[in-house]
Length: 466
Image (tube, rainbow, N blue to C red; front, top):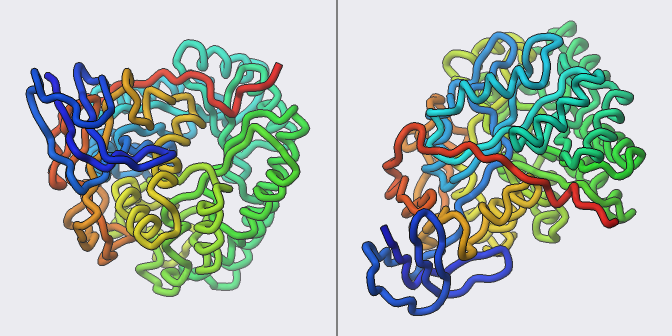
């Protein structure tokens, strides 16, 4: 079937121009002006609307087992929510597996969880929870056989890696052309503070951000960047940057011309603040790690996007029900499963708060939500752009529509949104995945299992001069 999107304001990472997009056999065949309608089966009028690449979220946690709790979105519910929010591709972070398991264990487990459920295209980040010769060997094997060209490590939590283990992983990653994504927080200080607050009876949500101060993030980012440099500037991706202090460490490394690393922030760290934690119940909804920060942190991160310092904007989508799982922390914030929804809200919030308010341009939004995530994780140019010959994933966004975000209109299995009552300017008319309309007027039209598993190639972060 041949489709033609006419008269849209086509948004790429470098420009916005009026034009047409011809689509055939799931691919973009042509981009231009006044393309002929001969032999076209369907014409879609996009006059006055933006046509952007399908957004790509490289930081989600679908069907995540976290201690005693499991994220309530599986790969069907979560990808339906993603699609309805204008995201046509995800790269999901695997949960930890059993103690001592091989890297292959979670690869097989995640195929079981996702295959035949996902409604949009998807890939996986591997996870490293201990280090030995076998694990280091498996990294390269999995990259070659599965196209999993990125692995995540943690500097906190039960399966955190020590500095010497991190160094070994980074050395191997550079050799194999693999990106290492890192959760950067100082484990020792955080655990000391959490224990101290609980012992003193300070168990309300308002103590959550105090137990994970911004300098814990900043110190860990600084340490991680130094270890990466010592490992020959191994490919490094810093996830969910939340604070001005952490940003300063990123800026320092860039000023010192360190290469082969990138930094991601998330929608919530740009738009929400730690004021929510003052409410003993509402605060439970926003317990995530790292926690929400202050208005000055929001502003610093927006400025970094304006200045092209931060590379991507993800979501860290990891939903637990407020009325059930989140209530585990009603009497002790440390018992609350950490995470919140966000995959469906991202495009609308970023357009309204970013583009409409003049903080970023439309091409910058495309860069941070579409093109750069694909470059960082080996999906470009098949995904994240509107070039002839590549997948026809696109979003038509009407800048003149307005709506108030509410959980009732969301598609996730979770029972709340952190953006309840949040007014946005600009709304999604249509979402297309490989040439097929899967969302129209906030109604999901796709099918369970239509998403394709993506074997990814090497990241731009892993490209070195000879």
